[in-house]
Image 1 (cartoon, rainbow, N blue to C red):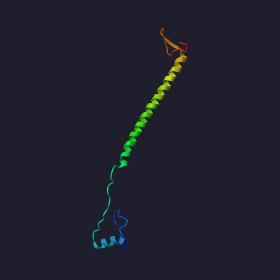
Image 2: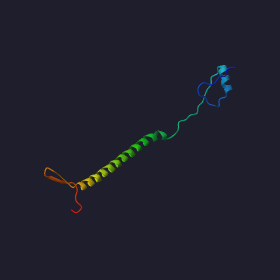
Image 3: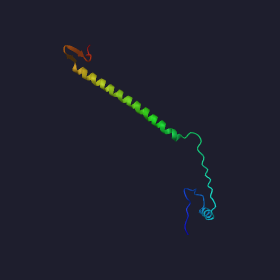
Image 4: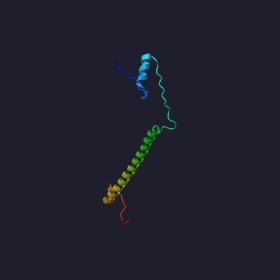
Length: 103
């Protein structure tokens, strides 16, 4: 005896003997699937755009903070170098890059 399996994905509660009897007699099978769409907002669909926007904003603020830190470090470095170097003169024009401590 050849075993017949139902085609496709069928509900697990349909007995095999009912399917085999319907197949043997040529009687059609009617499958009723109770599948209703969920009510309300699907949060998973909205989560991805908000996550991307939040990551973009956080990355932008991180970039601004890093640039501010680097500019501050560059300004302090320039101040230290200019204070140690003293006045710089080219062709009779003297430029004092930083004020002395007693002026």
